[in-house]
Image 1 (cartoon, rainbow, N blue to C red):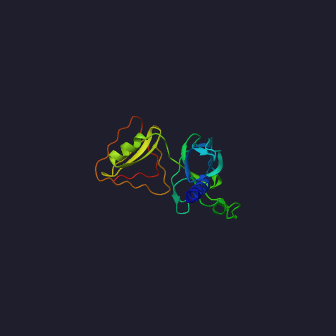
Image 2 (image 1 turned 90 degrees about the horizontal axis):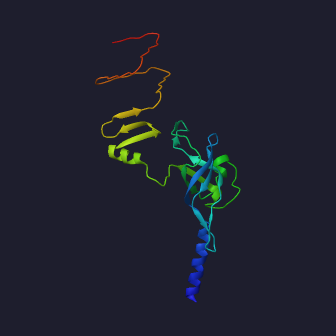
Image 3 (image 1 turned 45 degrees about the vertical axis):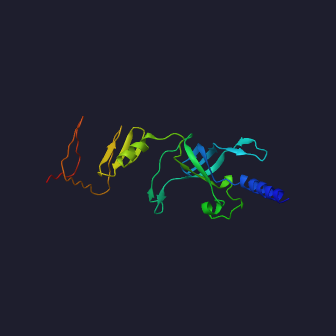
Length: 198
């Protein structure tokens, strides 16, 4: 008798937990940069009570995480496109109140509609991670252009396959403790109201 009760409790707990979603890998189906929302497709399988597995449905209007702070005055953002790998998280409560201040329409916990996602998850390792590890550096890369900041020497490397444009609303101050070496394959042009050389 006790064994049957124990098994019954285990079955009840398993049935309850089966509908609790925490996080799964997925891919971007479409992305709205104005709303910072995506339609995502979980790549995991959902197991039905009879043991069969089916695909998760697409999830719409999923907020996409980008690092930001100081009232969105400090932001790191990047291009997102269909097929990008993401981690989809399912929150404990509905997002209605957080998004709009409106009262939540549902009390479902860890529901598919309570999802947000983070880009960056990938099934294959990125070789730049090895390079950053070996150099103790930070690398910001887009295709073949990159910025690398070394932790041990403080050196900064910038390589661009196209133009590098620098614009400032105030002064540009450059102080060099050593030499400046310049190799130019084309022309050097200066346009200024006044040029002072010390």
